[in-house]
Amino acid sequence: MARGRPSGVSAVRDGDELNWAAVGNWLRRAMPELSGPLNALQFPHGRANLTYLVEVGGTRLVLRRPPFGTIAPGAHDMRREFRVLSRLWRGYDRAPRAYAFTDDITVAGADCFVMEYRDGEVIRSELPTSMSGYEQLGRRLMFALTDAMADLHMVDPGEYDLDDLGKPAGFVQRQVAGWTRRWELAAPPDAEPLMAKLGQRLAESMPTSATHSIVHNDLKIDNCQFDPNDPDRVKSVFDWDMATLGDPLIDLGTLLHYVPRIDDPPDLASGVRYPPGLELPNQAEVAQRYAARTGIDVSNVCWYVAFARWKTATVYQQLANRSLRGESKDARNAHLGDSVPSLARSAAILLREGR
Image (cartoon, rainbow, N blue to C red; front, side, top):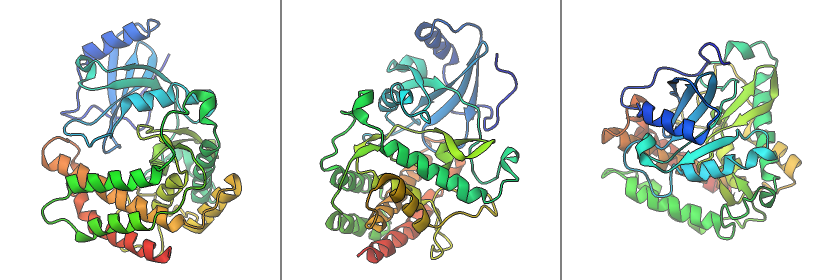
């Protein structure tokens, strides 16, 4: 039976409450082995999807649902995330197992699902005490994440009935077109003009995909969990709502986007704040390790990092808009749009480097 409050959770934010009686009734129907009262806490660090720790009797589960308010087309797909996690855990043990899904909006106000809860540490702006004392910890953590990504990309989707998760042909082209449309919908009246130009430049310079795999679509260190006793291996990977089949270098570009570069502008906000003093490998070292583990050519990786920064700028504007409309109670999102110009300029530099 679970005891004590785990790390990384807090009381549910005002405005993020659900109908806990309805949630409890659904869970007991979907998982008859559960019994006892329901208690709920919140994982407060994510900026978009809402994630809760629910405990029924002595059983802990994680409940996920989309954010409140207007949702971008195709975003925050809980049905997709449930499908992936209800199958992938059988062969990729870093994927938590999902147990139950519902599209009955009377339960949680939107599609939602529950998955297993795992103990562990997530690396954010402060290093957990349980993981202090390791030599070269930053390098070890980042290489562990690189290995987890590489291993995911070597999974055969057909073995887990996921071979129709996406359409690999034209994947990168659809990504650029889709995010161009999202920027057009999110752009404020005084929008950074470079963002629209970047969409055109990315479309004109797309590399040819040599292979395809399961793509997570948001791989970064704070979407992972580590066992404090084993910093050389990722224990869990979270946030699978954008998972699909496509060019695996999209994931590598995302990961590298979150690895700081020496020439990054001081006001660049990449979305990840590493603990002070955590020395990380550089982007080239991460790319080389990935290439050695997978055999995939990474010579065009600058394009993928540029795409990741442009996409992140769009996401930040979407989150800022949601905050300005009063749809989000997360105060961190209100000024995310301020980062768009720096991210756009950095993406433009990367595109020039990749030529």
